[in-house]
Length: 70
Image 1 (tube, one colour):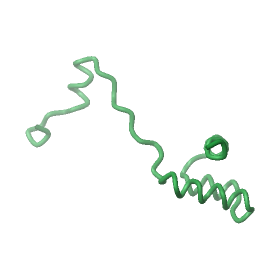
Image 2 (tube, one colour; image 1 turned 180 degrees about the vertical axis):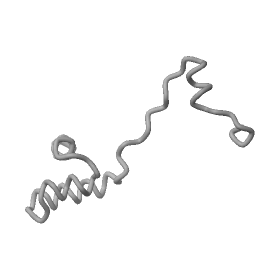
Image 3 (cartoon, helix red, strand yellow; image 1 turned 45 degrees about the vertical axis):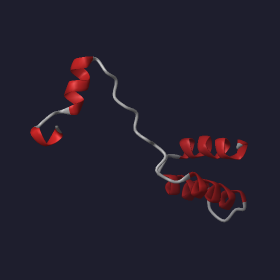
């Protein structure tokens, strides 16, 4: 249907449907755990951890706290 010019977002709006949330964690959880371990061991900085996850420092802290509680 897209090949024939169907605009999915436009149809969603017309039907009053909310957009489907996109996946925000592009880094596999296993790699996130390895990164938090490296952070805890002092092998990487918090800034490097944030860069690895492609987030800002505040979001990196939130992710780190979530990973530590798992």
